[in-house]
Length: 133
Image (cartoon, rainbow, N blue to C red; front, side, top):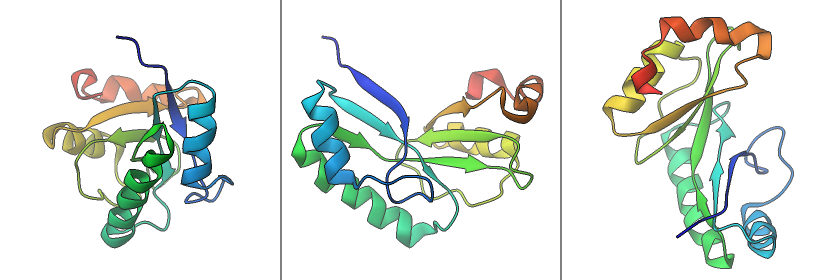
């Protein structure tokens, strides 16, 4: 079975997104996508907002496409961005990249190094445990 999925999508829960979760689910469904791996920016999130966001993703998924909640974490210098998905608590803002990746993996989460060419963030890759990404 093949599932068409989009990865690294922001909604209006992020400062740079403009579409609501239900609208995204409907549009991606219309285009034949079975899943969207959401990645909202960590700014402004805490555990309560993360919980509400996950519930809204679950509710919006009733419109067709499954919205998988995720967070795009950035380090204090805003150099490295790591997208994380999984049944994890909110891991916090301004986290050191290696610690974040290690904690996400230890909790059973999946992570992806986002924008590796941005500000030469790829240079951090040798410092990270590749098996944790």
